Image 1 (cartoon, rainbow, N blue to C red):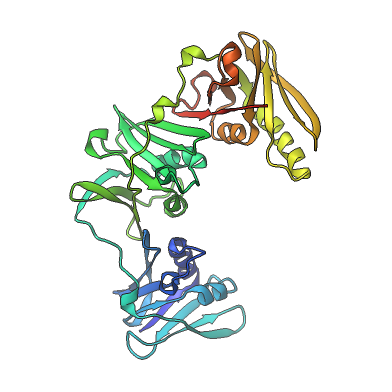
Image 2 (cartoon, rainbow, N blue to C red; image 1 turned 90 degrees about the vertical axis):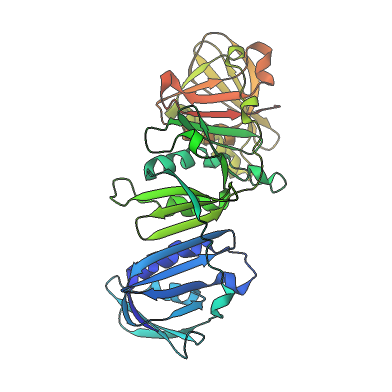
Length: 394
């Protein structure tokens, strides 16, 4: 094998593929990249056995070949390589031999022998025959993921919460994520960019696939085409696959589990009241409380909220900080008794609302102390987004 590749292109492709490599992995072959040559191109791929990322890039193929090697030394050298440089990858001793990289830096060349493993040790991505395309809009997919990803659970015991739940509801696509303390949902009209809900079964996209998918989606305004599909086996969806132009393919296993009936968590709005807030002022106030807590090495404090007709009081009391209090403008139809809320969860919800005004909906009267709190955009702004946050004792 003897291949010349543009350094900038190679660096970008390696960065994408290595997102499939787990940082704390202890299996040497799963730290490796496969490179195989095609006509005028090479294909780079990596896996952690649950997700496969493959990227095709242009290259000058002097002699074809295939290798599996640890990319870490090469990626380190590419950081000091100019954008107009060309990297040479030379395979020695047949397909089971060593691989030598020649990397030109700013004023000299470095040659490094890359650690390699036998070709058959790194598994290829599955290639299911049953595939149903469910969408083609990169922007819509990114929005549905970005809107709810902050609420994905990290708790391993309830593994089915460690991802984003996709399902159809009439003519809408709905994504949901929850960690048991807060839940985010986003709903949008299918609008031709997604298949009808009846054409694909609900699925849970794992948390580990979220960052790679968002990173590999084309930037807004790009002409790159995308499609994403469910790959099934024996009639059951097993994989999610993303295709970006003819370059990047991501294949990830889906979470095999039953998502809970999340609608039971959303309170009946007839039993809630409304606090109308300015997003900017509310965000600044919550961030100020966060900075005070960080200054004395505390987590984001539990906040006591009280609202009347013209304003909302935000308070925190603790032995280490003492009393903190601020009042921001707010509109309510009635006096709302004090209730507690996790300030960090409230800030996360507010940051993900694309609106100038925020609608915060606690329970009515004394119910405000124990009723879940809904966050939405005010006056039907960002209508697809809803976040439900559980109250706290203060």
